[in-house]
Length: 247
Ligand SMILES: NC(=O)c1ccc[n+]([C@@H]2O[C@H](COP(=O)([O-])OP(=O)(O)OC[C@H]3O[C@@H](n4cnc5c(N)ncnc54)[C@H](OP(=O)(O)O)[C@@H]3O)[C@@H](O)[C@H]2O)c1
Image 1 (cartoon, helix red, strand yellow):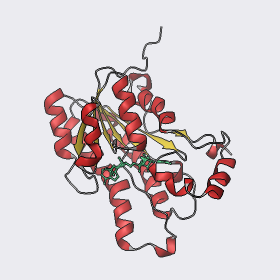
Image 2 (tube, helix red, strand yellow):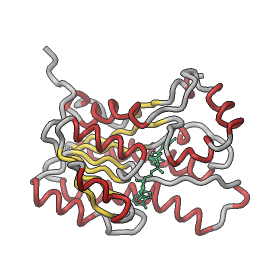
Image 3 (cartoon, rainbow, N blue to C red):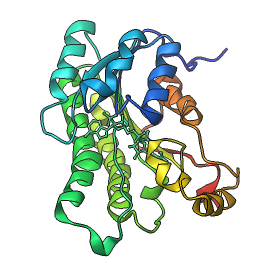
Image 4 (cartoon, rainbow, N blue to C red):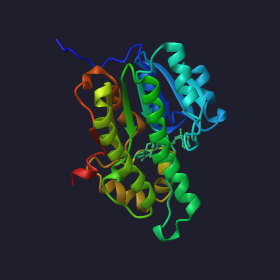
């Protein structure tokens, strides 16, 4: 008998950046598995589709301090607990390192690093007495370098280190914090690759599984990390990249 199956039925989950792409696939997977799912996006428009999909949508721009706090407080007031936070919101750019301007650097760092940190902090403070689970969506670009993604790579490396540091600091409060590191996944974020067939061809030739990932390729790992099946796992990474970083 499996003591801790992958089971999230009845758990309350908050996913930032659930309006599109990877976060949307995760929101749908957790809903289908019987969890109570709250998902955020930047604007009321981007989350409006959730109304008919049994997902609670809330607009909250995580690059601005304080915006996620009322969402977390609302969930805990209503459900008495927030079992799991998934930090999926993120942005990328395609900018030569020599051309980065301050405002573009700030936008990426404020969203991908400070926004993730603030959301973790707000969740910890609100849920401190009960413990919790955090899943950060980092990237293989936090582990390897590629051209035109210097600040993005930096923020994702920082999220990996943040995951480890918070896991150690908050273990005594019964929090588990892990990260998922996707490779190249077929979403709006990779449009700039898909629009250039020669770049796409070269990239997929270097991926042992010979294709981009699909958002649904990541949902099993998220369900595992949110469930008690991963009860003894904290401060770790799950890399889902078709073998890219195994070479
Ligand atoms: N696609 C890949 O190849 C890949 C690989 C590795 C890691 N990742 C990471 O996976 C995560 C999701 O990426 P994706 O490919 O699904 O991207 P996506 O399709 O572009 O979706 C990005 C999501 O983040 C939200 N978002 C962006 N800035 C936000 C902010 N300031 N506040 C709140 N929400 C914000 C967007 O909301 P709106 O719809 O409202 O704009 C949207 O829901 C990101 O952290 C990304 O870095 C992606």
